[in-house]
Image 1 (cartoon, rainbow, N blue to C red):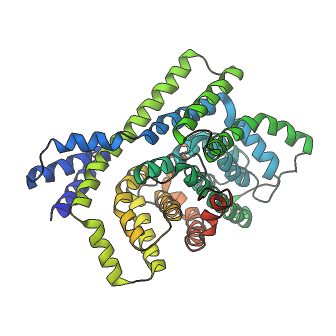
Image 2 (cartoon, rainbow, N blue to C red):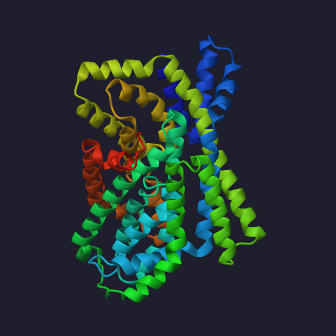
Image 3 (cartoon, rainbow, N blue to C red):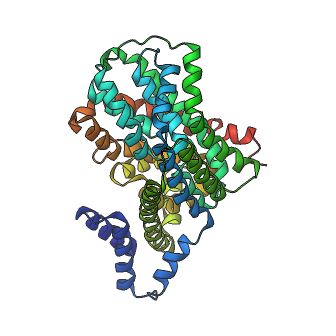
Length: 427
C-alpha cells in the first residue's frame, strides 16, 4: 500500500512537470509522514549517507575532464581522424559520425555530451553534403548511446558506487559491447547508404591519416590512461578522475585554448551538472530505501519465480521493463531508481553482476532513444533544425539493430566478460 501510494505520488508529480529529483524526494517524504512509523530524522541521514561514497567523487572529475578536453578543440581532430579511417566506406559521413562517437566516448562518457559535441559538427556537415537531415539526426543520436557504454562512463561509476562492483571491471566490460554495437550500426549505414543520401568519398592517403592521427592522439590516450591505470592498480577510479582532469588541463594549456576565465566557467558547469546528479542520487536513496523496507524486490523475485524458473526469460522480462522505463525517465535517474530493485532479483537468479550491469545500462539507453521523450533525438533535431516526427521512420531500423545487438550481448556473456577475464580483472 505504501509503495503503491509512493509511486502514485511520484507519477503525479512527474505529470505536473516537477523535476525527477524532487518528485522522488517529495513522494518518499509524503508516504513516511502518512505512515508515521519512521522518525523524520532518518530522512536527512539516509540522504547524506547515500552520498558519502569515495567513488562518487569521480563524477565531477570525469565531467570536468570531458569539458576541458572538448573545449581544447579535440572534437574536430577526432572527426578528421575518423574521416581518414572510414570516410571512404559506403555511407561516408554516416560512418565517420559513428566512428567519431566511438572515439569521443572515451572523453565524454555521456550521450547528451556526444550529441552536442559530435552532432554540432557532423550534422551540419552531413546536411551540406546532401544527407537527409532526419537521417543525420538519427545516426548521431543512435551512436551517441555509445558514450555511456565505452569507458570512462558516468553510468558505470554510479552503478559501481551503488552496488559495490569494481568500476574498473565495469569499464573493461563495456568496451567490447560498445564496439560491437558500433559495428552493427556501421553495417546498417552501409546498407542504407542510398536511402540516407550518402555521397562517395575518396580514400585518404596514409600520410594524411598519420597527420590527423597525431592531432587526435591526445584524446585517445586519455581513456587508455584511465582504464589502464585502474586495471594495473596504479590508482582508483576516483584518483583516475584527478589524473584525467590534470591531463585535460595540460592539454588545454599546451593547445593554448584554456585560460583562467574559461577554466573557471567549465569548473562551474561541472559543479552544477554534478550537483544535479547527486541530488537525484540522494532522493533516489530515500525512494529505494522505502522500496527495500517494504520488501518489494523480494516480492518481485518471488513473483518472477512463480512465472518462470528460466533465467533467460527473466532477463528478457527485465530488459523489456528497463526499455519501457528508459522511454519515460532520463537515463541516470532511471538507473538510480531501478538498480536497488533489480540487484536482489539478479542475485537470486544467479546472473553475473558485471554482465547484468552492462545489460541494464544498454537497455536503459535504448529506451532513451525512443519516443515519447528521446532527449538525445530532440537535441539532434534542434541542431539540424528538423521536425522531431520526421526522425521516427529512420529511427526504426536503428532501434531494431540495436535491439538485436542487445540480445546478442544478453545471451553471449563472453562479449562483456571476455576482456575483463583476459586481463585478469576477476582474479
